Length: 395
Image 1 (cartoon, rainbow, N blue to C red):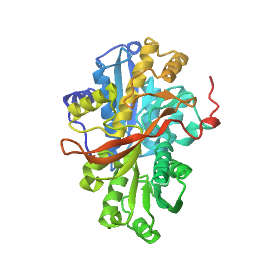
Image 2 (cartoon, rainbow, N blue to C red):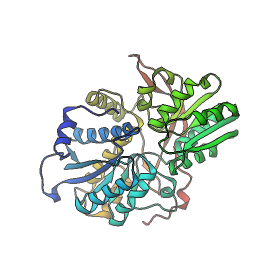
Image 3 (cartoon, rainbow, N blue to C red):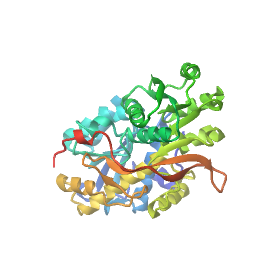
Image 4 (cartoon, one colour):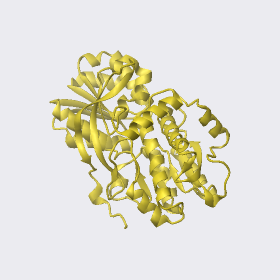
């Protein structure tokens, strides 16, 4: 697990993450940050946390001009722990916003605590299909991407590339089901096999044997964090990379995967809404400042954590610090008046983003580092989600 070692973060953690110094409750913004910060998938939560805190630091320890208190906690990859932490942050700490969760199953277990108390949850990652459609909620804002979207772009790319048979693998939970549904929505070829594994599984010998027997043109997996690291190493180690292509969603071939896997990632194609090389000014600043602060390149997860903080910052500023006015805060969040690292950003009516999705490939930069590079025009431009028509969002 990679953790930040900057003096800023060390001091913030030692101080209970009281950013901006002591202040009366009415004079600060309180954020509950719950994420997976231990175990095989900890790198994902660590990247979101580090980028969120970096945004606060670059804003002078403030959000929307008010001193910010960010309370960071580890959900330990356990839904029941996340639920308890949400309850503590909301009922005891009386936070103004919740954020941070990586995995959909964990968030779905915990987020009702926020909805019941009318506390805004700004999601830096998990964005499951039910909350995009029939279960949409005025207190939920997804700053990342709908669970299906990366996979829809991947399915379209597989169709564009002319693959005839693709084998699909994902964990057996909401995001895993959304991922493969998204891929199949835009892939016009044959599904050679569709397997749902245990969430957190690290040994894929049985699945790889089935893949070998199926003889597909390509394999598409949704296996974030340690799951993906182990799968790719085992896929290459079994010699399957010589016989078939490995297709990935953006986070399946991003910096948190590249670092431990290494050169085996070269030439891997993936789909994402963000990349290190997007040319807008906000992204150039983010990438440079993140690398300066943490001595590593940011991932997709980091980009989303950074944007989550910037969205909250913009909303608090728009309401001039009057965060007790829930209607005004919600309107300010929906307006999304911030410079996103992905470029243009706007919310759909279900409070999920409408944005571009790109094809990327893992190569080497001028310094010889393995990085993702964008290829050509976006696969999808101004792409929403498949569930918005089912959302009856109150005005």
